[in-house]
Length: 466
Image (tube, rainbow, N blue to C red; front, side, top):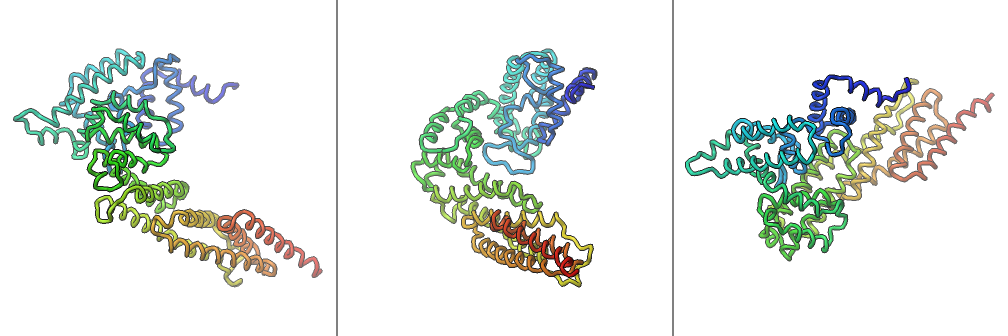
């Protein structure tokens, strides 16, 4: 009975047959690969690894799935299946099709040997496992190159079609290139600092020098190296500074003419993806991450428009304009709906329309408060996102209405019918909640004391009458 829950779990897992332990590990690892939120699975998986592999520090966490080992070096570049890839990204869904092609046609013998070696080295060190993986990756990269650039007489289109669906075929050259140049990417990654807060001139110059490696300068590989830099930037749009430095100009034609012009395409794509994610979260009523994403979109659009001389009729200019229109449309309907929702909660209905059982839904109050905060956040970024006039008008309307309604509700509490008093009190508390968002804590506290005073006056009236 003195055992902790963790100790009891570890004891239970240790009693399972080896086959069951292996099955559990495999299923949990696959769940993690799919990006599922599996905190419990991660915890159980770690305990299983301790039991199955012991405490040997050289025995690093790994999976029994050969495909995952094969494609693990692609992890920084993978995106979810519902996203459109840009240069430097690979669809996660493509990996299963390409693995099946490698197993059946591409390199069947090396794959079988790899799987056999994994079984033989089940308790081998991380170094031994990595050596096997690198060997297979080199063979796979060569096989991919052969199907992309076939020998004379081989039908390239037919050979590519056997790899998988069009999306997998589209990702095939990038996958082959990353596998082939894994060592160059790892060497470059080691030179990156963990957090590039200020991507200034000295850091830009250093990055360009580090990128000056033949393996990373190809049109296929450069976007992947840039993607690795993006992962370290606090302001991702700043990746365009590499292109500006190489071009020696902010003119979009000169920037686009350099190999690093792809950095601008990548930055604009990422801002567009952020906009799409933000639009989806707003539609679902999820406002917890809106402030952060809205700031990133705002800073991205402003940074690109400020640092680059982009023409409105160019491809980049049209994409930026489309982003501004998209975010404006996504925010407009939500912003304009807020005053109506607040009025429905604070409107002083006639006493005859209020019963003793009338209540205000606290969930609606929470949602309305979140929406008011949402409008306040939008106000900070309104000018760059083409919602300035609408946001300022709505925010001013909310301030005026909530201030007047709160004062009116306080007055109504002083002489209201006891039957409607609980409902009026709930309205007043909701109004105070909105005041805190619109006017700050001090004003909300002042109104709270006024409500408490009004309630005390109402409580004392019957005593004086007696």
